[in-house]
Length: 402
Image (cartoon, rainbow, N blue to C red; front, side, top):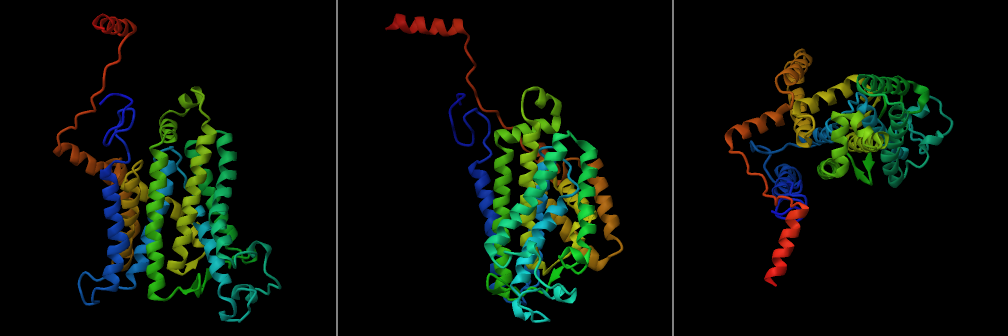
């Protein structure tokens, strides 16, 4: 295939395209299984059937998919830009609190105290009026805007201060962990206006639909599937673009990228802000399905656990982040109920094994096995470049034939 032409599965530079028909088929199959298969098994299969999906499992699967979105957001900055953020749980929690504030405002007079203007915890704490930062959360459009704006603006300010000062490596990781720890302590305070230790809970409905109904939970699950698909496409678009190549160069040799004239600060700041917005989006989908948001979501341990998901699944591979989040949380659900004292030891051991023996995670292992079994694929054929003398000879020959 000549350089500069386009063909099936290749781009104009003769490189394999990231948007091949094979990718779209796999993407569509996953979407059908998650978005149509699970609801069908929940609605139209008898509860006694071994393949039936019970009602309690639908929000649990939705929670796993929210974690997958969170893992994608971290993989975007860690796996491709080399920025190990140990505070992504903070952006997740900020988006969750924005959604929780909207859900609390929808309770109205149905609360325990029956106050149409103040949530129950504010009545209990003797609040006289609604704090100014709660204004507007009785409208869904405003809450949706805050879900993106609050984590995004917070990440932009934090990133601008950190990247402009060229804070990198382990120092940046420690600062992000300190950030989420500070927010954790702040949101525990009752006078912050976010429910203190108890957080925000006792939701009634979302967009007029009762959150406890079977149909609403199924709708939230489908919305999470759509959100995961959109997040995956956004991350893939970024990582396969020219910006994605710059991010990989930043990860491997930041000083060389800066020497070549690229704006390292702007590239890091952009991807860090986008990643925070995606994490906040995951938190917003998480809250109505779980039914509560409290300061424990800011715990530094949660952010570290997200990094473990990405590491186990395969850092720098988007599908690895999704697989790691889902598989690790499936194991967590089973182990914490069957052997609760074993879970933390299992998680730590799994992380050590993946670091020492599987540095590329599950996806790296699968790729290695596929490479061992399948013959190597022939590279695309390219036309060798001609020198000036060769071009003149071709032109003279064509002139003589004419």
